[in-house]
Length: 300
Image (tube, rainbow, N blue to C red):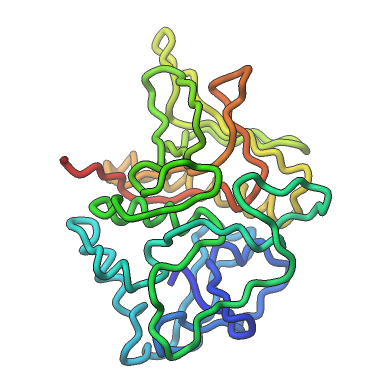
């Protein structure tokens, strides 16, 4: 399972986000499915783990649990539209990005993100256990949104709201960076590209990530790059991103060498550098992630 419900706050928590916490209560989570509540145990959640974090259940899901059926929905969604199921499975295809949890940012002097408003304390779900969710839930980071983009290529017409982005569907919110020359982007999007094989370059102030896209010059790719300003990040947040990138890079290399159709993609929200168009900037750990999956563009 990619996510579970915090038993204290009722907040739905992404497994990968546990790597940002100083302490993880391994007995504090349960399945977030309808009328389920089976205990969910976090796995591979330490920052040094080079595998994807996840939740594991040790007993059967509830009879009406929709999470138990998610794998079948995901499998069907790679081949055809599953819109009806997505509309009633809140965690599979988030409807909007809602940046509310500030535990990941260390410095209180940081300006609020233009992509969302900051709030203090922990969010409490408005849903009640035992009641079927009314619809698609918001996401507290871009990760579940990016997973949905890759998993459900035939449902990219579904609505998606991200503050600071002026388009309103999965199809139009995301923008692929290509290897057809360096472009200038006047509007903010969720940018993405296949991750390069090159190891990210690290300093005390920045992490520079190369992408497998950009401009070919004399047979050599001059790539786009993402510069992460992590001066205000905790050591835990830095380790989480570095280890995630390394795991994704190795996944990408292994997939390419085995001729698999899947690849590791880097997704991010951040401004393009006005002086160096090949460079983008990110300063919030919730606005950058990797996802390993197949990228499909259905025929029109």
